[in-house]
Structure formats: C-alpha cells, structure tokens
Length: 131
Image (cartoon, rainbow, N blue to C red; front, top):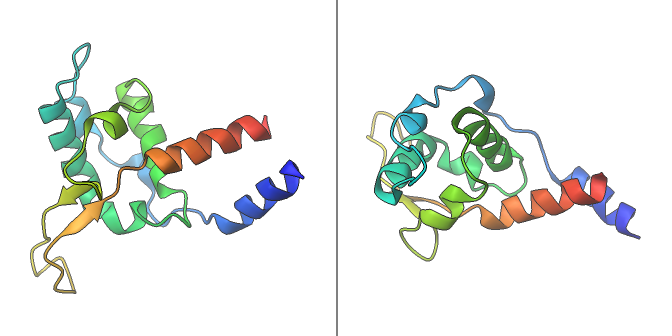
C-alpha cells in the first residue's frame, strides 16, 4: 500500500526548470556563517539568493525547493532546517521585494517565498520510505 502512494507521489513531482547546481552560492555562504548563524544576515542572504526564483520554489509540483536546499547545505554545510526554522517574515513565508518592471512582466507588488518546511518534511519522508 505504501509503495503505491510513493509511486503516485513520484508521478506528481516534476523536475526543476532552474539548474541550481551551477548557481553562485557565495551570496549565502559569505554572509551566513556558523557557529551562531545570525538570523538577520542568514535570512537576508537567503532572500537575496532565493527571491528571484520564488515562482518555481513555491510550486509544490516540482522538486526545485528540495534541490536548492540540497545545494545550499552542500556548499554551506548548514545544519538541516536552518533557513526554514530561522527565516520568517509573515505567516505566508518570506516576503520577496517586487522585481523592477524591466525584470517582471506582470504588475505584482510582492511575491512570497513560502517556508518550505512542509516540502522538506515530505521529501525526507519520501527518501526514508524509498530506502
């Protein structure tokens, strides 16, 4: 019964249209340093890096958020869940500033980067079930 649920879940999730493997993570790794991991610096750097990709990161039908966090943790050696537990602007997640008109085709005043803790939890559960 569980294997059918896993297969159904795998059919639901798409790949990611953004190649997070080759992005420059120094925006985060240069500002967010342990052992203290100051929330102001870490969350500011995280937003600076992630907000341009808010649309794909908030789409729960792809694996962009889990892929991005895998590379952030790989390059920064951060504790699991650091950004999800420390970075909150509103109940909806992190508030991303509006993009300049030359970058954004629509007129949205704000975008939100939802706290991806649910997606991370689902991904972790999926990997545990798989192995």
